[in-house]
Image 1 (cartoon, rainbow, N blue to C red):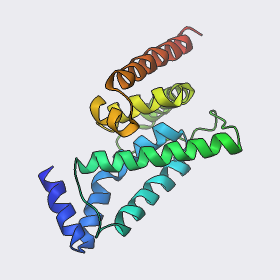
Image 2: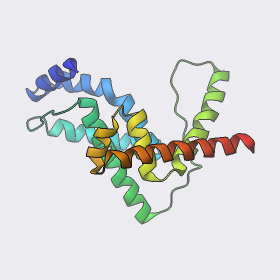
Image 3: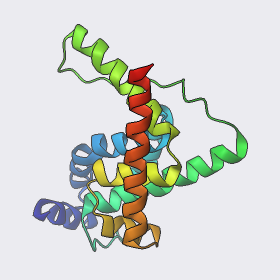
Image 4: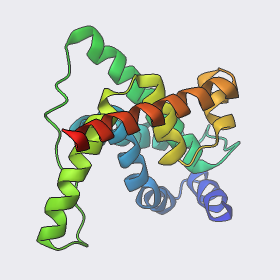
Length: 181
């Protein structure tokens, strides 16, 4: 948190290395968040890039009132919600067209298992109603507290907790039904 405040202070002063450090620090977390909300890697990458471009352009006016990660996660979630809304208006989304996400730390056998599990989880998350998916992802991957999510969505904390609980229950049900098949 202290590092973030220092980085924001330097960034507001025009230090572009600070922006680069912020990008490096939060890019992967924000990308995971966007992928979970959109279920599409290409769109998720676009959204994260757009958020950082907007963030860079607002350096003189930017004022940090909470956590930097929370602010950026909220920006990503807003853009993801807008993208989902636009996609619903223009076309239906195929959930089977998921791309795989890889990092360098596993053996090929572990990748096969991990990839299959990730695909099942991604498909199950993609089947959740958007409000439940958003509550789950913002809390679990965005590290946001229910109070922050409620404020961001302009609803009560109980509503967010219910969406989270119902989302977990539905996710369990979806994943358990795949195991039984």
